[in-house]
Length: 118
Length: 114
Image 1 (cartoon, rainbow over the protein chains, first blue to last red):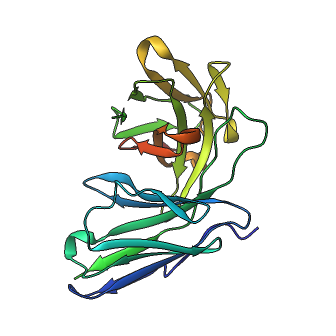
Image 2 (image 1 turned 90 degrees about the vertical axis):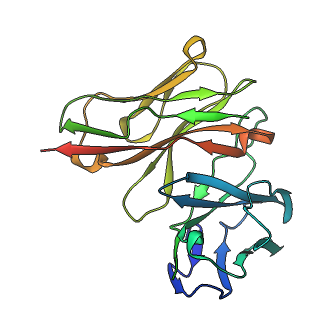
C-alpha cells in the first residue's frame, strides 16, 4: 500500500501566483481531509470530503482557497492568488469507515507539501 | 466548540526513563480522542484512539493513554522511552460523524537524551 500521496513535496512561489496542491488518497478510502500546519496556528482542518462531496469547509480561511475532489482517487487544494501568510505545510489525510458499527475512522496522513510564498 | 490543550511545549527525557505527555480537552459531548506522532519532515501517524469502553487504551510502539472524564484529560504514557521516540506528539479531539472533524492541540516536542 503506497499510503497517501501528495505532490509536490515542496513548492516555492511568488505572491500573487496560483498554487495547486494535489493528493491521492489510499485506495478504498472514502473520506479525505486537508489540513494546514503553521507555527502560529498549529494544525488546522481546512475541509473534508466524504464520497467526493465536501462535508465541512468551515476551516477554509478565505475565498482565495478552494478544494475539489473530482473522483475517489484525486483531490486538489488551490490558492489563488497566493500570499506570504499562506506559507505552511499542507497535509492531506484519508480514512475509510471502520467495520462493526461503533467505532471511529482512523485518518492516514500524507507526508505534506511545504509551501513557501515569497 | 471543542479545544485541546497540551501544556508542555517541550519535554526532555533520558533514554530508558518513563514519559508522560499531558492533554486536556474541552468538548460538550462524549469525545473521540486521539494521539498522533509526527517525526521531522513526516506526516502524522496514529498512536492510539479512544471513543468508548475501557478508559486505558493501548497503542502502538508501547504507548498507552488513560481517559479521565472528571479531569477532561487524556494523558499519554510510555514506561521506557527509546531514542526513536524523539518526535512531536499531538493530542486531538474528534467531533462530527465518527469523530472525523479533528481539533489538534499545539503539540509537545519530545527530546531523548542518551
